[in-house]
Amino acid sequence: MSGNPDDERLEELREQKMEELRERQGGEGDAAEAQQEAQERAEAQQEAVLKQHLTDGARQRLNAVEMSKPQFGEKVKQQVAALAQSGRVQGQIDEDQMRELLKELQPEQKSFDIRHR
Picture 1 (cartoon, rainbow, N blue to C red):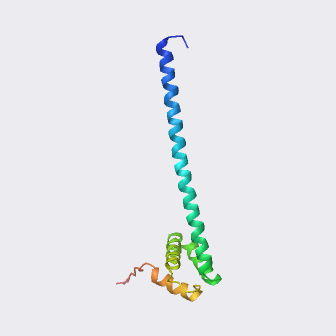
Picture 2 (cartoon, rainbow, N blue to C red; picture 1 turned 30 degrees about the vertical axis):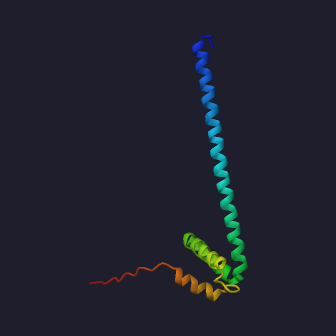
Picture 3 (cartoon, rainbow, N blue to C red; picture 1 turned 135 degrees about the horizontal axis):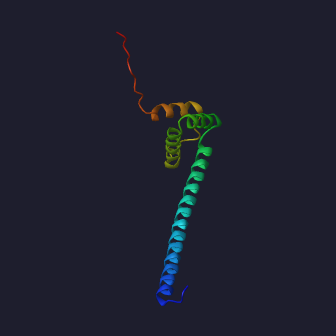
């Protein structure tokens, strides 16, 4: 620098502002990191509940649904986990019960009648 006191003061203010920005970004990064860890723990807990309450056939069917319709598959997983945690699932859900659950949770299908004139 040229040694001008105004330039030095301006440089100090820039450094101070940069430090504040770094601190703020670090804090936001920690919050986002903590949120991601919490989400991963919740997903792991949900998977553990599903493994405990679904037979292999039901789990395969749910995975197939999730592959074709990811959002619907996630909705079904949440529903099964909620049922299991509330105690409304006795034993394990087999493939036939999973089919019935999928039918109940499936959104209404719109049908179109096409008439040719």
